[in-house]
Length: 358
Image (cartoon, rainbow, N blue to C red; front, side, top):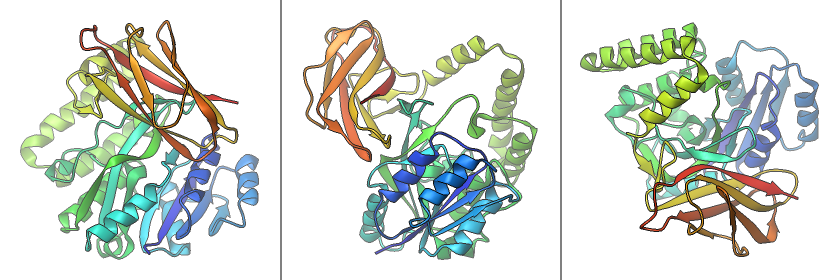
């Protein structure tokens, strides 16, 4: 059985950290986790104390940054396959089991990755990670891999020189590129493997000077020259907009850009539902979930909703479809929901799916 060494770097307390650890614990045996805490927050210390018997390694104290912490974890934890999970990211139930199955089905693979859902600060699903694509040369033009859903063989990782500790923002993309250029064998799982928090305050949303410098260096070294100016221009426009545009203009521009994006599971990046959209939700709250409220933009009276667990007839009011489970859903469970709009209805947009708790 393939074994996993997972680093969890913590620079600051995040309310999702208990969920992140719970999602790793729920993956079952063969998963060793290192908690690397540089926050100085007593809540992280208390959580580490509570999970001391289960954690394979932990450190509470300063480090040299996220990359340094990730490397420390892997150096102190055994496992044939590596990955890392940030304090605000969460694995889907059974994610590593699906990775193991892929490894068994395709001998010789070096890296496995899958899809991710996007969640907000209430752990409500708001969409999918629409930048994810299947393996290919597009990786040299942009990061098409969702890091929390990616796992790679330790021996192959070591053969390309490992994670660059000098990078703070794009160390994942830079590592994927080196693995790809080394002819490592990539495999893709077309299922959601993780839940990723996205928001204005998350590290992934930042386009500060250091991140722009790191991006320029990677693009200059690895992106085909004819594409470099185009990609630099896109980053520059994004950076300028981030600095000077009012928030409402940024939201309007982002929605316009997302209208031209791909559909994933029947959902477009701006939330438009084609005919039927499939949603994937999982929760790790310390109380049971009693249902889900689906927030839509458009007429909901004739919208059909189906779930993978037993439920009562959904209630509809305003832009909400309220789904109540027959039985409360405990922590560590996943629910699939299909939202179907009538063929003759106007445009329908998905906004988010919110857990209702006991």
